[in-house]
Length: 255
Image 1 (tube, rainbow, N blue to C red):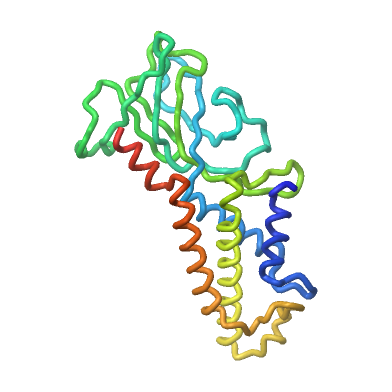
Image 2 (image 1 turned 180 degrees about the horizontal axis):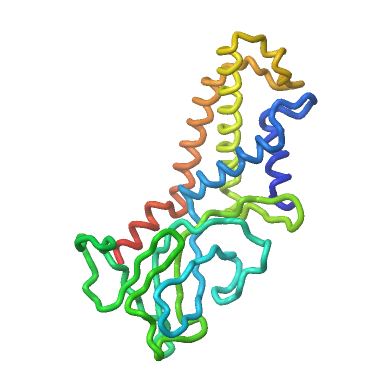
């Protein structure tokens, strides 16, 4: 079964025991919880990818686009098949005489003094978000099709469940962590709702948000403490097997 938005939302609603009408959490609210969980998970365990770009003579900057890690580096991504964001560029290489040559990263802030470990080479690159800046400008002998190779980190897909189905493409072992993060986010919404009700001095039933199966009077703080413990334990377990954001960044800085 596709692990798309519908599947994830249904699993989340089941875990929240919010399956009988009237439902407490709307589909839109659960979708927001899922998207926030995807972003948080990707901040811990990003998707490492590489893609190749063509260069014209005089090129000095390129906009790096998210890619599909299942495709070859020089294959364009079909429209509507991914939904993710570039997080950080980590490595740049130029094809020279049939071999990939490292293009060193500038350890210098624009207009500022050189930092520790600053590159003194005549060529270099730096990044601002998804924009890659290279120096000097590409010469005639360097230009060509797919002659620039860029390694970068991006988020995993935000899942979609309508039109072209987009699955959350992180490893299956990470699905329980996504579920815990999304559930934590949902209970935070319940906690905020409880606070509004208490502040208004109103009976929850008068808000029209009672649920068929969810105990809206539950001690949300206890639930959140339990979920945070489970999240921390699972995150630690995954970090023993899967590279983390910090490890990717440290590896890039050490090159």
